[in-house]
Length: 190
Ligand SMILES: CC(C)(COP(=O)(O)OP(=O)(O)OC[C@H]1O[C@@H](n2cnc3c(N)ncnc32)[C@H](O)[C@@H]1OP(=O)(O)O)[C@@H](O)C(=O)NCCC(=O)NCCS
Image (tube, rainbow, N blue to C red):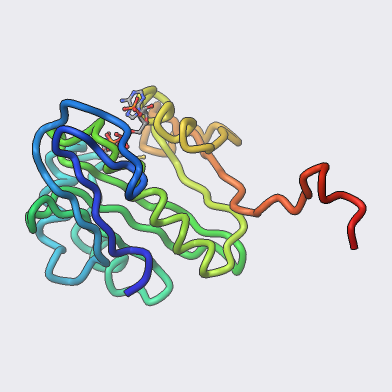
């Protein structure tokens, strides 16, 4: 399969970028990543319902559409085969994608799973030729905004009432374009 399949160890020493040891003291576990399938629908919806209040949680139909939409990408994380996290991305235009959602099981948050899911979505986005990824995040979710900023996303505009009356969202975006600037030692070569 594509780059969506990989392993992230979170036992004692953690590998966040698949090979690089970066952290000590996490709960034991081995996180694997794969594409989402229709069989994940209930687990995805159940996790989303536990994380978000009813006004913000997605409907099962929204997840169903994401899972069957051929231009969308869905990635599931499992801990020893048990569903623990999910992320999905849709096509916005020929060169733009949109991260629709990312949910990590609460007791496994802050162990690098969210970052790994976003990196996989970005890898898939580049393969599809997207130059920019967009997302929306509630203005008052400061921790989540920090998460995206840490991954290189920038706030672009405030979307008033995006999550209902009085609940605004930040639109954030990240350029996926690879800089073509040559290191000084190679400049001038042709
Ligand atoms: C947001 C979310 C996906 C992040 O996933 P995660 O696995 O917990 O994040 P990671 O461990 O990969 O975090 C990577 C980095 O982002 C930053 N970060 C993550 N969560 C953060 C928080 N709550 N506050 C501040 N910084 C945060 C940290 O710098 C972190 O690195 P560190 O732990 O080494 O300091 C997860 O917390 C989640 O599912 N939240 C609930 C659902 C949600 O709000 N989804 C987003 C909808 S827009």
